[in-house]
Amino acid sequence: MEQVDLVNANVLAAGANKKSVRVVNGLGSLMGSKQMADVDFENDSNMDYLLEQDKKEKEKYKNKRHISELPWTLNNWHLHLNWLNLILVVAIPLYGVYMALSGRVPLRHEILIFSMIYYCIGGISITGGYHRLWAHRAYSAHWPLRLFFAVFGAASVEGSIKWWSHSHRIHHRYTDTVRDPYDARRGLWYSHMGWMLLQPNPKHRARADIADLTDDWIVRWQHRNYIPLMLFSAFILPALFCHYMWNDFWGGLIYGGVLRVCAIQQATFCINSLAHYLGDQPFDDRRTPRDNWITALVTFGEGYHNFHHEFPTDYRNAIKWYQYDPTKVLIYLTSLFGLSYDLKKFSQNAIQQGLVQQQQKKLDRTRSKLNWGSPLSKLPVWDKDEFMEKLKSNNGLVVISGIVHDVSGYITEHPGGETLIQASLGKDATKAFNGGVYLHSNAAHNILATMRIAVVKDNVDQAAKFAARRGEVYEKK
View 1 (cartoon, rainbow, N blue to C red):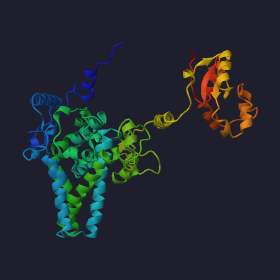
View 2 (tube, helix red, strand yellow; view 1 turned 90 degrees about the vertical axis):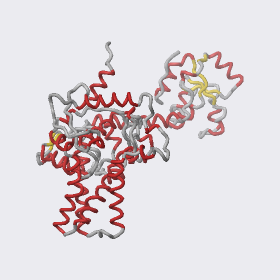
View 3 (cartoon, rainbow, N blue to C red; view 1 turned 180 degrees about the vertical axis):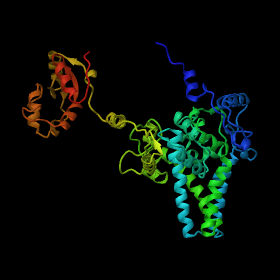
View 4 (tube, one colour; view 1 turned 180 degrees about the horizontal axis):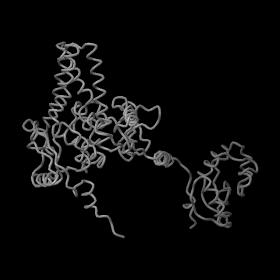
């Protein structure tokens, strides 16, 4: 049968077979582009541009080690850092912390309430918009809701929809590999913030299909205008709002802007770090994602990450009524008002299958650590004469359901008394064991199995049926 062409399949997964719309913004080389560009459906292919960049990088580092592969020194430490992200994620938040703790900008009650509300608006725009709507297409939304998410998602200063969603799709495609942008195997700090602050290795560059994103005019508009939109929605808008409402421009800028952005960034980063480190794995444990309610509390319900990685296009993260997932609730409510539609859910059967399979894996691991006795297939087969010959040197043998057991070391431990078990030595005690005298417990069957030494030739079928009741499969020799 013809095999799938893996090279072609990866081209399809990366979207390199399509003429995608090239959408760039105006921050120059700091954001990976050199100039503003209009959308050109006819001539401008974003994927061609990106693949050409990949080719140039591979040639550049063919005989030269990238900075990420070199040790840190006093002369090159500054080359290891992503300075734009360092300013956005570290420097600006530290400035806000200083202004707040120094008392230069006191916190007023109304500013605190506004900042908390604006925090929720920005956070839900990331989880409900950037993540579940655009990155995973877990549901569809009409333009008013998409525009809302685009504007206030930018207020969280986590990059554009296009950049964020592309990185996240790569994360799901290459989870726990060197191509995973926030590879959890490299440690909690790296997956939380380190990946943003360090220069990535171009050898591990990866691609995911984002043609559906660049087909969305709101995504294109936001990406082209991301820098001014981010500055306005994240800092200028809260400052102006607080100025006109309570005559507190600096309070709005520091608390509603800088510190709010810092808080929401750290909460979002927990999805990449804590959600791969803390909690349990009820659906699959082959990779690092985990479910935990702590991460869910600080990420608007994104903490049930093991479920999410198994069922990424489900609009829910939490599937039980008591699990915290306000993003799920918001999406459902917007569907009632006609703002969203086509909410996707995996079947309960598929979800239950995952749970049962993982439970079985855990049981199998626990089972493998226990002594269940020698499997029948590994026992020798004795005929009657051989049994009688063995009995001469060991009179502690007894036959139960076609299996020979050496009970000599258990005679004094037998709960029914020594005399009862001694009366069975050298004999077939099948009927007595299976209800003739005692209807033995499951524990008794398990203990008996640890004493197996052989199978009686004429009773192989009986032995196989007896073992099957314990879940064993016996293949006749």
